[in-house]
Amino acid sequence: MTEIHEGDLKFTFSEHCEVGKYDDWSFYRNQFQSIARGSKAVDIVCVSDVAAWLIEVKDHRQCQRTNPTDIEDDVVAKVRDTLAGLAAASANANDHDEQALARRALHKRRWRVALHLEQPNIRSRLRPKPFDVANLMLRLRKKVKAVDAHPLILDRGAERHDLPWTVQ
Image (tube, rainbow, N blue to C red; front, top):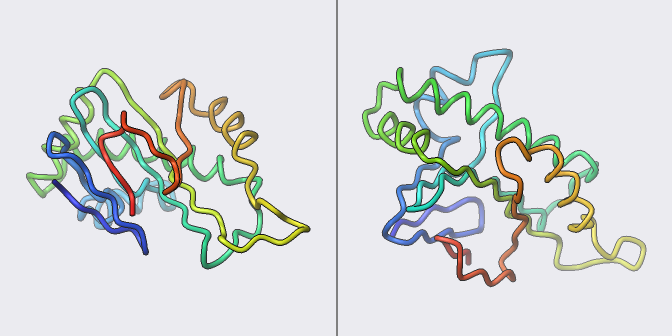
């Protein structure tokens, strides 16, 4: 089992997954990030038996996002730039492990996009939910359908037994 920490969240991946914290890869940091005035990156790339997962983590329990309406644009840009980065890493990464994981991710026939979104625990009457997840899902699905027609928006409370990871 592989564990990846993203802020206060701990992601535990099953043993049949190959996982990388993509935004910490040396290839992304030292070679790819400078392309096109700064590319963006999802937090985690996971290659499971059936799919390659692009996982973006947003934890708004401590601080609130000032403009919640553009979160899907941020995720879409990160997905797009990560796919380009994986293609470049598969050929040009200096780190053999990063290059191998990028190649395995690119050879998967199915891509999945997951947004792990933690919302504030204390909600006001004025703003009971900073993010309307159903509306966000519709907007995200529309924008990433070329990569994944059924993206997921998850949080720690979502018990999904079909996912190759758990979050604490």
